[in-house]
Length: 309
Length: 240
Ligand SMILES: Nc1ncnc2c1ncn2[C@@H]1O[C@H](COP(=O)(O)OP(=O)(O)O)[C@@H](O)[C@H]1O
Ligand SMILES: [Mg+2]
Image (tube, rainbow over all chains, first blue to last red; front, side, top):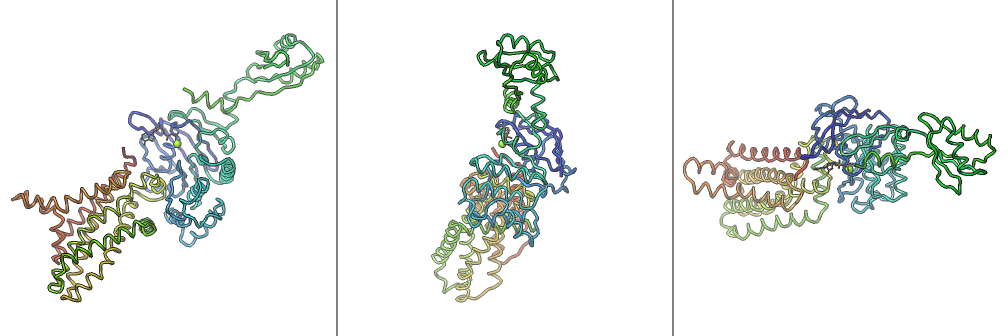
């Protein structure tokens, strides 16, 4: 089931929390919704899940607008809100049963579904406890279990790993990746490695607007521009090498980083790579090439460039 | 309907899972029992009049008891954020309001059922009047519906249970006393107007066994209006 978002806007008083954003999520895609705190991620998710109304624009889920009273879109969505609010005084099993009944799971299947979720989310040892007695990580699992209890085609997860310890984070990310094979997932986070670890596509949002949209690789390419290589060459004077490097056809600029180490940063001209030329140069001059590594623009840098105002 | 029932069932289960529930129930029974005994201890003389005393006292108990049941229903869910999770399930705002309403009313019915021993004791001694007893309970039920709806509305406009409790009492006070007092102090159409709004007079007329459609319309109007306002306030989502 796919999601189409068109020119969505939401204002709180004078502030535009979400400002005219449009994007699509295809069936079976894991979309990472990335942005600093206050960017408008949660607000967008609240509109998709039907918690707050749409002010301007439209959201279509499986082709049907959520404003259509017939659409019944909430049945197709599993939602884990930010901060994972749960009824702390309820036992886990009762709570999952409650959620299953509300989401229209047939009575005969409810027990099986609960058993399945408890297995999938690793709640087996804790299943007879009240939610309030669980640690944060286990509550997060209950949050995921309630979101998936009715086997929805769409999962909306708002910062699913906040407050978890590193092991739990790895487990939850793996779970999301596995789920993402069949389901359409939107996941919000302000943690970069998280999107790289789990998402097919990244949408960076800042101050209510989309500032970047693409796979991690395309975003990197876009931001990177020209190729930059870190090069270390031995058996000659730094100046001689620098001169020879800058004489190459494909090289635009050479920076000497460390004189003693003969370490250079070589920028190629647009759309060209200088790797082969550098290698040939060294062979011709009988120099020894001890390092040749492309400098990747890190996703962190892209994120910072796009969201620091 | 299935959804409304699911929500109501959870409310009931949660209520009986907490100690507060039993405290409230015991207070309700104790309060009703004590005052009925205190004011009606001429029970051996007039069974019928004594029942009247019981229903009157019970109406006062419910006046305090209902706000305590309804106060957390939406306010607490708003405060902890569980409201967001509830409303993003496939339920409508109206189903949530009706589910909470049904849950509270069922609880009131349980409390009322627990008062049956009083009534039976009194009736055994005096002349048993089934019609009167049924009408008395009907009056209490109608009154409870009105106050529960008011309580749910009050719970929907705040994140603070105490504020919800006080708001329900405050609104209830008008229906329970103030309109009645005003009706006495004004004459002519204004007095009539306040008399129409006075809940006590409608309650008395129902519990005396005079089933007038005017009284039913009165109680149902308050109930529907309260629930409708609750739904409207819920639909605004954020309160500031
Ligand atoms: N109920 C609200 N009332 C007023 N402003 C709000 C409300 N909810 C969110 N906002 C504002 O909208 C902006 C976007 O918030 P949010 O969507 O929660 O951001 P994110 O989830 O990306 O951190 C923030 O500036 C926030 O202060
Ligand atoms: Mg957020």
